[in-house]
Image (cartoon, rainbow, N blue to C red; front, top):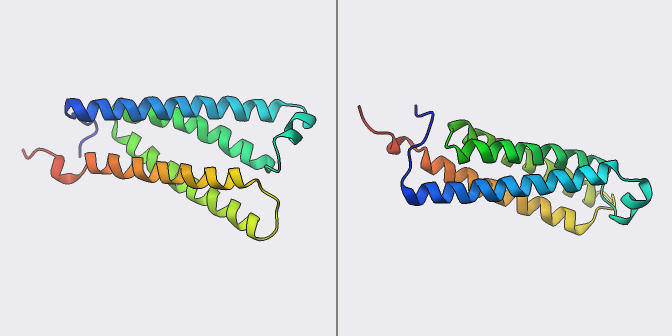
Length: 141
């Protein structure tokens, strides 16, 4: 089993692009949610009807984004597993948010749509990385 990928130049560029975008998004996510968590209740009220646990989930997810970006940016196999972990976590989070929304809890529509967009992103990244580490890509010895 390959622990580290040795891709072509085009694949290295794509991995670097994905890692950069993911890392920057993780830093922005951590910053915005950290500010919301540390803010006064008056400021938090201006953000809308976002459950408090969403801020915590997004703060930890942002940290995992940065770690994952480093993992697949450096072409480590565990970067693939971290991407799939994020896809599963976001699927669970999105499901909970939508269930809360359908049971009458007031949640901003932007939060609900963002949860689906993040889920789609991580599924696509996971599929791309799984394709790169597919068994037929492993050289025969």
